[in-house]
Image 1 (tube, helix red, strand yellow):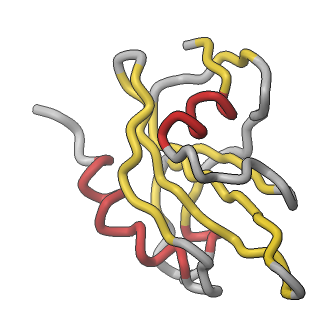
Image 2 (tube, helix red, strand yellow; image 1 turned 120 degrees about the vertical axis):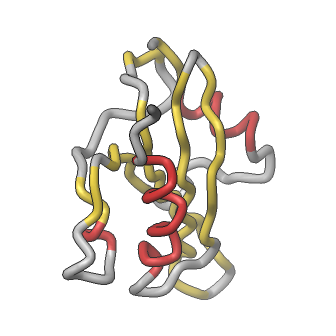
Length: 116
């Protein structure tokens, strides 16, 4: 499906300062609970930004880094599901610590359960 990631995420969260200090986007295909950081979310990094790109349906984790006054950048993580032409926010961690990914595990397990 063709979509503009910046436009879509800004419509979901109008207060986001999209990639003011960088960030990344990756698919989430499965979990690896042997680690408790972002490496536990197994998937591929994908191209994103203020342009049209083709995305496959599935689960995505977005890391957006925003500048804060006189401090290091804040890392915000958002978990999305892309299905039936719609991008839906599933969960978010604002100003995540080193084990931020663990907070998404339950939601990801629910979303990864195959429909019968």
